[in-house]
Length: 495
Image (cartoon, rainbow, N blue to C red; front, side, top):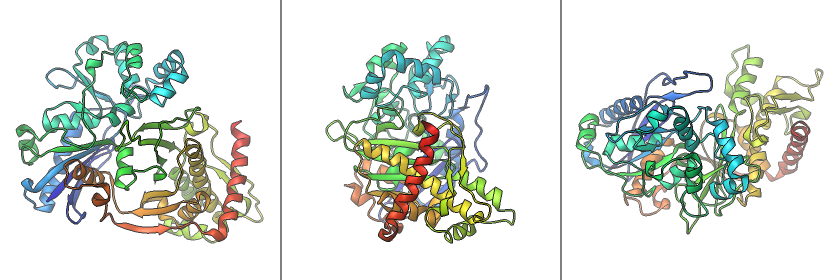
């Protein structure tokens, strides 16, 4: 018995096949092997052809079936993870009307900001939990304003994962979690965001039918089965955006639990058990995969642009001898907590929402040419990244999220002992590292939706935990002192 998960990213489409009994990944594949094309007709635009996602998905499916040698009939369910905030428009024949406007496209920023002002911050934050911003609803408003003839032919709008589910099954549907990430959901009224739709002049009939995140969302059609080599009738039973799905992949469902990634940019995703928002809109809040009106579970998403990119930049600057990341981590470990006064503010990769959209640039502070060497710079960079995470976690805690555990994949910055020890030390949270990815998480999610697993505990009972990092009480004061120094330097620059 197997579970199939898809992860529809903007760089590639990945498929993973999980043995439902053991939880082991028996095959995985991704396409294309080089980064997928992003169409940028103008500066600030970013589009992709949804048909290309389908073509990559076909290749990835063929590869996992070939590698695993399983019988397609043994696949019991399918789950989908996808790049968030994209817009796909189709006509009555389910034909795509224009390229998808994807998550990193910024053309609708001004439209969303005007809506925030006209509708009022109080309404937007208390009902949508966010500014309309550059999210899917604002992108659709841009199409209405700039492509009015095309707009009249739209039958339904979808997120990227909704489109893939449509191609698999022929059914058009979405989820509350998906609607919330597009700013289409009113949390106060537990219904479509009628006031925002009315403001933008968007007919509610354009919104797809709502299905549960976990549960039957369609079945593989005969047409799709013939294209993919799957069995017709295989149920699609789970769907979520990439960040909520990453949290699911890491077994993060409950208040106080945090999912984190630290690649080029960093993400801290915390679960809140109450409907709340940051009055300064420094974080985004969406319905988590297990959210219900009766039992709220909200994913509070903090994205930090200047994360692993700083570590990479430091390596280029001080690694003329071909310094590896492993060697960098060893050098950083030779320097005590606080980097003997050297302080780095890691915000050199554009404006930071966490800092109320200020672009402060990266700052390297307090270097003494007679005392400090590259070891100090390496450690200060890693500490600066951690402290930016701590700054964001403080925002989450002010919203009522008690941070007790941080779950992360065993990858990128979490491979560094200095990074993870500092994060545990400064937050007081236990860090648990797991061997998983988005496609594998989507597969497990489908097992929950299909009733193969009867609880999240059962679904993740065999998730491979690689390491547990507990806070070092003997260094707690040193971590807090170093963070206070870092925050003082930051506050002096963002006031």
